[in-house]
Amino acid sequence: MGEVVRYNYRLRPGANAEHALESEWHRCRFLWNEAVFQWNSGKSPTLGRLSKLLTEARARNQWLREGSQVAQQQVLRTFGQALESSFKVKNRGRPAYKGRKTALPSLGYTTRGFSIQDGQLVLPKGVKIPVVWSRDLPSEPTSVRVFRDSLGHWYASFVVRREVEPARDATVGVGIDWGVSTTATATDPAYDQPHLGHRKRCAAELAKAQRKMARRRKTKGFVPSKGYKRAKCEFAKLQKAAARRNQHESRMWARRVVDNHELIAVEDFHPKFLAKSTMARKSADAAIGAAKRILVEYGVRAGRRVVLVQPAYTTMTCAGCFARAKQRLALDERIFRCHACGLTSNRDRNAAGVILAVAERGHTRVDDVRHWYPSFESDAGAV
Image (cartoon, rainbow, N blue to C red; front, side, top):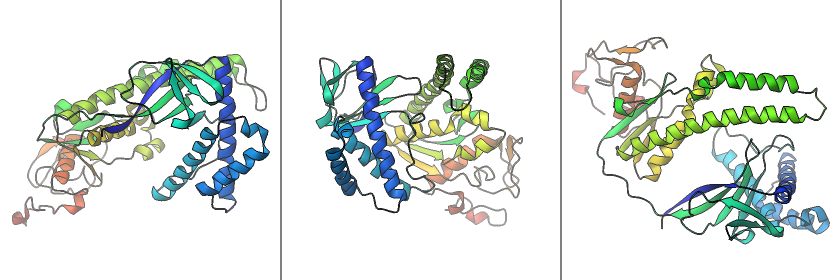
């Protein structure tokens, strides 16, 4: 059957097509905000009830009838999925209002709402948009999402099905520990991902663009000038360029790790708390969350065994004998020394070894593995 993936392509809409897309987005945004209002009012905005309200609203409102019913139905489905995810996933916020000036346009269409003719994407109401076909589609798309990024560029994301390439034969495992100075430290030094510092290299240009934005910013209540919009676009281009470099490096590294390892033990690290520390800029530059997400996605797609290990006590535990230190290591202590077996190793390398050992024993936490102590030699390495 193959796997379901997304193929993204750049769009080149003309002035009329772009105006039609923005008008359609304003209708969909209105429906999204209305669904949020229904939920905040204490009502139960199920998909059936919202669809019924949409039908009644289109019958009364000429403005809504001018838009595509497929796109409007899709935005209600997206709202329902977001609401369901907010209940299932812990610490995920519920759907919020989308502002006219802050929310970026995003429109979804099923097979009834779009087609591809002569290399162009044809949307309802006769909207035709040229597509930059950087690669061929592996199959007929089942749906498409048209969206605009912060630079004002339009893209089409097609949902297609493609054949799964068989992964290479591998028998070894690897443990991954996340960090700031080195983005990913593996049990094998050949698979480390160094901190490349793409954002740091363009920090001077980013600061210059921010100063230009500050000079051209008008007081609240006035329409932003064209000069301010150009400076804002310049700043967004620099940020996106650094993010794309990080994404490319993470993809190449993740592919190499997945191709050569059967077991991938990954520290389930959440770098959100670093945003409130002095390492906030470094952690953002390292893009730990993006690298972790790409590695897990590639591993699952290739059929590898991916284990997320909780980070608690991985730094304090010896990878050789699993004895735990009595005190936490300070951040400036980069060498781990075990007083039980005498192992001396790099702090992050030792943590990667602990993560791999925990995953090999079929656990996801260090506490689930019995520790070894000098007075209980018979329990060494026991599970």
